[in-house]
Image (cartoon, rainbow, N blue to C red; front, top):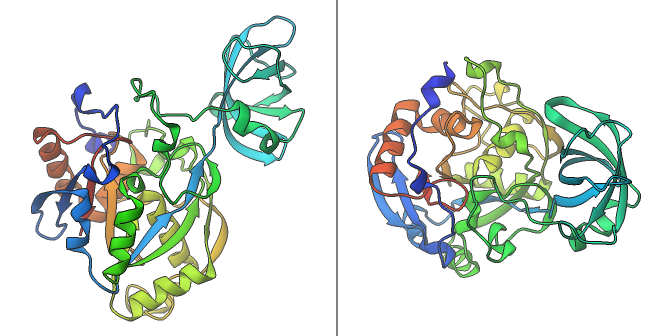
Length: 356
C-alpha cells in the first residue's frame, strides 16, 4: 500500500498543547469497525462499552528523563542529548545536537542549560544510523539521570510547562521509555478501580518505547519502512490472564498500539498457525521477554486483540497504519475527518478513540 494513503491534513490548532484535566475528562470517540458508526462520549464513560470478564491490557512502562544538557569539554560548545537505548549501564545510543559532534568528542553533562560545574563526563565513541551517537558516560546512567535529566516531550508540544508527571500514566512503574504510551494517559486511579469493581480485569505488559515508534514513513510503500526493535515483556501471569479471558469468551482490550504490538508478538510466539481457528483458544499468547520489531500493516490477522483504545496519530506514521489495519483504512479516514470537524484534540495530550 502507498504511504500517501495514510496522510491527512491537520489544522495546527487541533494539536493538543495541554492535557485534559482531570485525565478522564478527555473526549472519547467510539468507533464501530464493523458498521463504521461513531459515538461521541467522555473518556470516563468507557466502562459503558466494556463488560464483566473483559481484560484491559496496559503498558506499564515509565518515561525516563532522557533529555540531557551540557557542553563540549574544552570549547564549551552547547550540546543537547536525547538518550535512546542502553548498550550497558554506562553506554547509550543517543541523539546529540551540537556542531561537529564526532567520534572522540568529549562532553560534560550538567543539570540545566548553561549551568556549572559539569556533573558527568562522557565521550562519543562512534556515529550510528540516523544521526545517532554511541555515548559512554563516566558513571552508570541510572546513578544520576533522575537528578540531571528532563522529561522529553514530543516536539509538537511546545506550550506546556506543567507537572512532568502528567506525561506519565498513573500506573507507570518500569522505567525505560523515551515517550509515553499515550492512550493510557486518560486513566485515573478512580476510573481503574471503578472498572475493576464492574468485573473488568486489568493486566500489564511492558514495551520500552523508542523514537522509532513515531518515526514518519518516508518511503513510497509502507512495507519498505524499516521497523526497528524495542524491548518488550509479557509475563507468564499476564499470558495466563489473556488466555483465560479468551477461553471464557471475554474480550482483550489493548490500551495503546504498544500493547497491541506486545500482545500480537506474544500471539505469534504461541504458534497459532497450528490451530484451524484464528488462534488457539487455550493458548492465544505465550510469555516472552526480548526485542520485537513487529510491524502491523493492513492484512495482519489479529490473534489476541479484540478492542483497541488509542489516540489520534500523526499522518504517515506506523501508528495510524496499525489503527487502519485494525479498523480498516477507509473507516479510519472517515473517523479522522469526523474528529477534525468535531474539534477533537490530536496526538499525545489529545483525545482518545475506542475501536470496538
